[in-house]
Image (cartoon, rainbow, N blue to C red; front, side):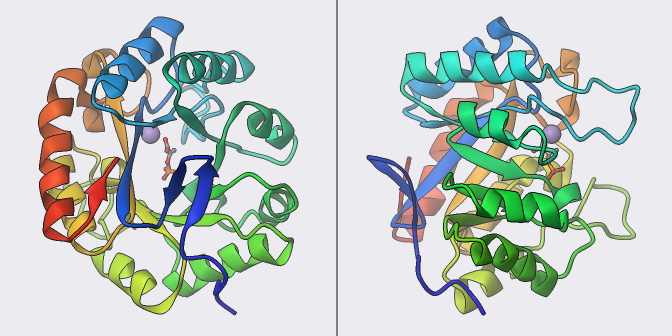
Amino acid sequence: MINTLNTSVVLSDNLQIGGNDILLMMGPCSVESYEQTYAVAKSMHALGLRVLRGGAFKPRTSPQAFQGLGLDGLKILRQIADEFGMLVISEALGVEQLPLVAEYSDIIQIGSRNMQHFPLLWAVGEQPKPILLKRGFMSTIQEWLSAAEHIISRGNQNVILCERGIRSFDSSTRNVLDVGAIAQIKASTNFPIIADPSHATGRVDLVPAAARAAIAAGADGLIVEVHPHPAEALSDGDQSLPLESLPAFVDDMRRIASAMGRGLI
Ligand code: PEP
Ligand code: MN
């Protein structure tokens, strides 16, 4: 069974994903402070961008790494997004914190490491907020679609897929962006799909090219990490765009979108 009900997912009264416009979601990997998140949102707002990402509960490989601000992070995101009229996307790591993340976010992210966390998939399927389901970094396309079906089977049809790179033998990039998967999902399902060029490459110098490739392959949007001071970021600084680069980045994406006959918001 594939999702044949939706070609686009409604995010708010005047925002959807999967229609003609490509949607850019941006923000820091982790919410670190009010000031950091505010600086990012302000730069985004100046460019007309509408969806603020930020991790409050972080899935870190090491328990010694920064684990996120938790509830305080969600509150920062909500307050700043409301000030700028933006939507919030943030990750729920487990079933226990889902009600909290759902209360403060407009879109709930299921991270790569949790793609087959079935109780979490069922729980997000039983609530109405849109879900961004990231591809497991060692998962096949079929496993990914089956995970989406788990959500849908509990009643929530509002599933957006995210290709965020898969693991390969080559360590020169963090992951490998599976551009073909984007084309295949577009050709064989009705799910909106976006790409995450930040985690796919792990390298800020490669993010724009990966992002262009994703849009050219048919992606409906991007989720991109940005930071006011990438060198000081508490997570994923190496792949975070500095704020100064945002205008040129957005321009670049708009040109590819236009070549594809699409707008960009
Ligand atoms: C993230 O979005 O910061 C993140 C942890 O992503 P992923 O689950 O794709 O690794
Ligand atoms: Mn990250």
